[in-house]
Amino acid sequence: MDDQIKKSITERLRAAGCVFAEEEARLLISEAQTLDALSTMVSLRISGTPLEHVLGWAEFCGNRIAVSPGVFVPRRRTEFLVQKAVALSEPGVIVVDLCCGTGAVGVAIAKALESIELYAVDIDPTAVTCALRNVTTVGGLVYEGDLYEPLPAKLRGKVNILVANAPYVPTEAIQLLPQDARLYEPKVALDGGNDGLDIQRRVTKEASLWLAPGGHLLVETSERQAPQSVEIFTHFGLIPQLIRYDDLDATIVIGTKPTKLE
Image (tube, rainbow, N blue to C red; front, side, top):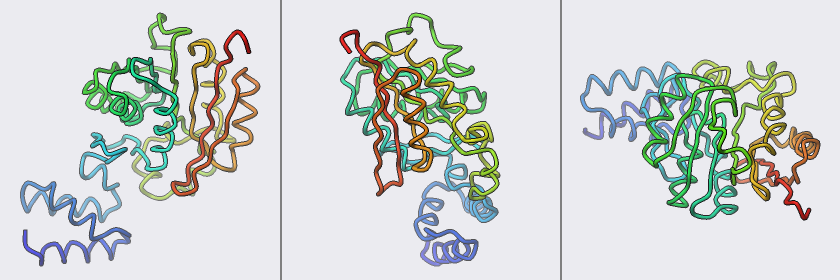
């Protein structure tokens, strides 16, 4: 496609408030099969549809992750959680990705380590359908259900790495989110209850039943909520570690299940 088309699309995207208009124009042009398809994609983006939903994929930890309309888009900041999970792992570990959405976190861990046993879970059928497209490519299994409920009983006490990018936005704060999230992502993937930590409490409460001794639970939280997250981990018997990475505006808490000697 010629430069004039790219320039025109860039100008339309910029006028609609797209901060990275030139990069978005390049991506839309590269994905569109025809001019009609391109026109449709540009219109969707201008109307506010998240870029990843328009493209059908998001880049996450260097991987192209399939993203369906109505599914939570993986965030750059969550790459920090993946980095820490990988650092605590070795090939062959058992990894469970709760509230998996697209399955991006589990897939990124699997690709970094090459050989893991991966189980992903989400309560939202749309997310599960999307996760199947991603997780099965690395040999993982996907389950639909509420947190631990659908997991095979054989995993109890055996999980080495438990990651849960659970929703942590307080219910009343959802209306303050950017339009991309507020209008196009499922509330179940955003709403963490009154203080934003309801799902995190439920995850942490049962974590020790599933983790192997010395296993780790990693969750993403906000800088403001972090002290409370640490308290929750301690209350439910995990040894907490709080880590912040300003470059990605990322805050995670790692909880370790004590071994018998501890």
